[in-house]
Amino acid sequence: MTKIFIGSDHGAFLMKEFLKKELEKKEIKYEDCGCFDESSVDYPDIAKVTCQKILKNPKNKGILLCGTGIGISISANKIKGIRAALCHNEYTAQMAREHNDANVLCLGGRVIGFETAKLILNKFLLSKFLGERHLRRLDKIKQLEC
Image (cartoon, rainbow, N blue to C red; front, side, top):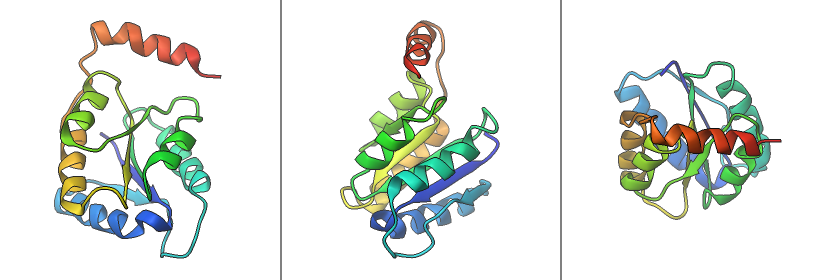
């Protein structure tokens, strides 16, 4: 993994700040793509800025957060080359990486706790794409991109 790009809207700002500290503890390089306080912002804008940076290197990964994680994951998945997975537990984070080669982890700052978010992040970072039978499906996903 080259770098993590992390972004959130105001609804998940505090969780983003918490996860940045977790990345620092693990000595993982990251870049904060906003927002930078709890003032209202539009999650599609954060998704766009963050995902554009992720796509500069295929080894980059991202973390995107909004209140539920739904809006920001929908926004991120509109961008060609992004496979954003909204995860609620460690299992979904593991499957997102192993089966779908997700390059963006999406979380809902108002629907899961900080400790759960930390566990999900750890599982996402440690899990690797398994390839093999999943490559066929990943290729089909790529064919859907406009």
